[in-house]
Amino acid sequence: MVSKLTVSLRLLSLLAIVNAAHNLSAAEMRTARIKSTPLIGHTGIVYSGNFSPDSRLIVTASWDYTARIWDTATGTLVHTLAGHTDWVSSVNFSTDGRLIVTASDDQTARIWNTATGTLVHIIAGHTAFVNSANFSPDGRFIVTASDDRTACVWDTATGTLVHTLAGHTGAIRSAHFSTDGRFIVTASDDHTACVWDTATGTLVRTLAGHTDTVRSANFSPDGRLIVTASDDHIARVWNTATGTLVRTIAGHTGTVWSANFSTDGRVIITASFDRTARVWDTATGTLLHTLAGHTDWVNSANSSPDGRLIVTASFDRTARIWDTATGTLVHTLTGHTDTVRSANFSSDGRLIVTASDDQTVRIWRDTHVQQQEKALALVLASAQHPRLGAYSPAGSLDRLTTQLIASFGLADSFSK
Image (cartoon, rainbow, N blue to C red; front, side):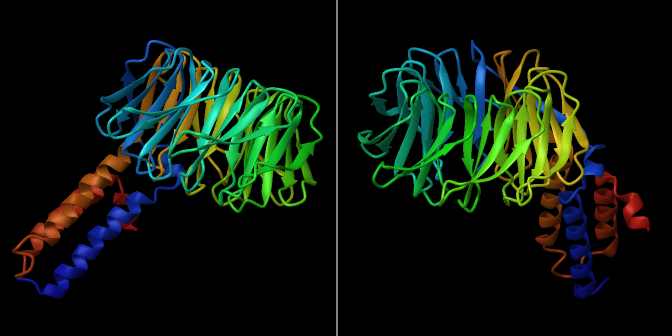
């Protein structure tokens, strides 16, 4: 028989093992097995895929005129959002996950109920393709970007037009809210990005300096900076409050398709048609890493929620995972048979969803995660076992400890 103190200490040891598995280094991740689950059902190119805020669902946008909701755990189709009459090019969840907004080449956006898959509102008023639709952080508004040279702000609850953001002289590729919802930034074919006041719809700043189409414009997490990406091979960083150019990020030799801040704002990640993604220091604009290895255009590059990893998507039919700190390749995700259009992390960083021209979506899981979930269940079950409260035999805990160490391949670590 052993004391309750001994039992408690051993349970803490088991939890430490689980924690060690949760915090795998990039080097350890290279030895992990990544498995994918294909989501099959679309009959056209799948342009994007995004997780719900709680990661339990995935929503996809396709050129088959539909968006679809899938169960992350099982990969089963939950709802088909049908009604658009042309390609669906953008789809996003609201911050609370209760609503979804789609944007389509049929000149409309639509709001859907996530739980039921039913149509809530048709957002009509644009006179050309709607390229993107995004919710404000508080969910009260939606901003749409269109080839008709306008962006529009809509009331989510009613689907009615609140403001028309007019001033661009070319198609608007994207429109996003700042993290506090006070401002909107738009990116346009007219070589500029513009900052707008959400409350009034007035133009606040014009960010001029690019010499070709601005493909994307995004706020930093604190909203103080904006990064733009352009066909002129350049990304630029701007001061939101003044509209002044802070720095020019040069080095790519092809279109910079996207530029995004990491979740902590410390680095900027660019994706380019020069077949690379690059990591830059936000404060100085210095190139930190060139993520080289793709054999065709890179059209997407996104940071994990904790900032430790980056996932890229490419026309070479692969997605790749990279270590942010070192720029080294961690994994190549193979399985798609055509262009990978997008790749995104789940909110907890444990899953990746990719969307492809092969008409499928894939969910990628690190098998270490599945092992650690099973291990945690074992630990919790052991902790609640009635015999543990009344002096469990030490041997049972020893066997569980050995099982967990073997399961995670941590024998070397725990033998040192």
